[in-house]
Amino acid sequence: MNRHVTFGSPYLLGFEHLERLLERTARTSGDGYPPYNIEALEDGGIRIAIAVAGFAQDELSVTEEDRQLVVRGKQAEPDGKTFLHRGIAARQFLRSFVLADGIEVSSAALANGLLKIDLVRKAIQPQVRTVEIKTGAQT
Image (cartoon, rainbow, N blue to C red; front, side, top):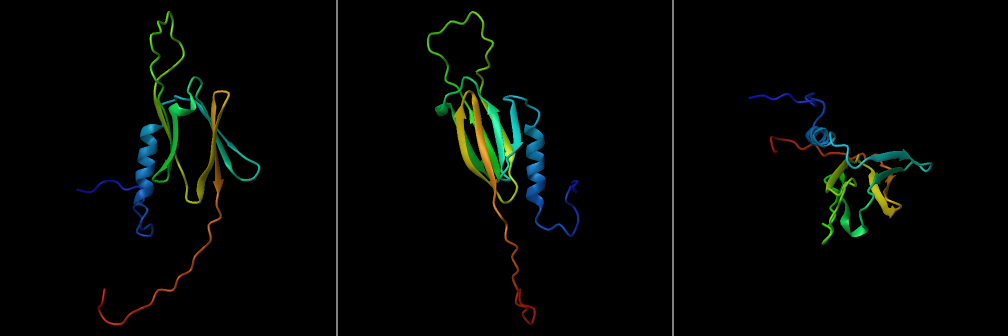
């Protein structure tokens, strides 16, 4: 059974991980909560600002997992409160961003209901390596 492969060119060897990343991104892109902005910084970096009003610092986590930036939020249930109206979203969330090679998280800060995550672009040095050619049918 053959399946459609986006990166099916015989010249694109080892790019299966990109296809998996695209599939994973497509699955998580439909949810609009929480809203976020992405801005370019003057020094070439990137800043992601996520609106997390009502979340405390210990209710948020920022991790890098398999070349993805993953932001999770889970608020504790308020003890003994009775709401007459509850219009402020207090649901948990998971927001992920695929990181290209050379992009690293440099910092994260929470202020005024915004979680700001700064990313830096590391210089990728081109590498050249000579591979020895052996004689015979050794593999």
